[in-house]
Length: 430
Image (cartoon, rainbow, N blue to C red; front, side, top):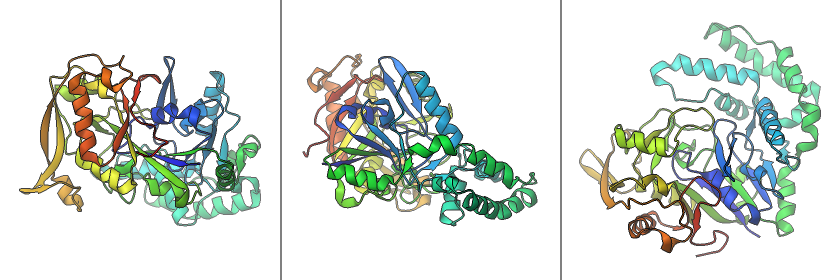
């Protein structure tokens, strides 16, 4: 049975949670394979809004086993806060599995994230300050604390003390902050062990066995393609691999078992944080799209920067991820517009680029080349088949599909679970 990888095709906030939820009753496992609580998924079920930050979206679907993979960095306080919040609303969270190899966000990682971002000033990246980057840095520097370390106090103590022997020097001598006491960090982490223990295991083995039994597994990315640390708009990126390749390293599932790659593409573009944004709008239309779509960060509450749909970016996402199916979300945000510009290429110093420029400098100076499509001026939230869409809305979807290199299998026409049009099954080949 297939492994489906679900990624974002832009800078995040495309609606991956809704896409996961749409597939819910056809899935057995949903695996989060990268990131931490620095991004969120919002899912609306029967008018109820659920904002998830660390947990996989599959936790909202009865019968699905949600998995936090080894590629995720885990803030344990946030984990249990989210679990408690869902349980208080009647959601069964007992199936959650967590990789023993996932890394833990310690309090000193959060402290360093916040002070280093302030220290950068005008050169700041725009991080959430939740310790994600410093935790991944510890992982690569072999200074990290893993989930499994919490069950051996001796190892945990050695690792925390080793990390703080360096970090306290940085905090006190560079940032003029108080040193962090190792014992306080150790005791905080140990306080989670008993509740954590039943959730932890060899999730790569469990997923392999599930696939052998014919189960369907979906690997769900945090963040998105243009935020990938290797393939995104570096340095304004996250600290992990949010593209389809990261699904394998972040879950322990080999690439030979991946069958479909689904990318979520919003009908316009948005991003949170710093960095170049060729199609960004600084006018009342951008404000209109933001308000109609409630474009504020699920995790941070920050207003998102808004721009027109960028098909150069869409083609790039298709190529980097090997996308087989796109989910086009928030088409309804255009219901009130007379016309809709779409970016089809960039111009850099008088030269046209139909693909992403190779250099950061060229992307920073990219000027969008637009083609303008007519709007439909009609509420499409009630449409449940492609034929029910106004003709201009159908033309918009077909225009985008013809230019991004893969079929658009699902179209979102509203925030609710049921407000979608399924043109093709993403579980089957074209």
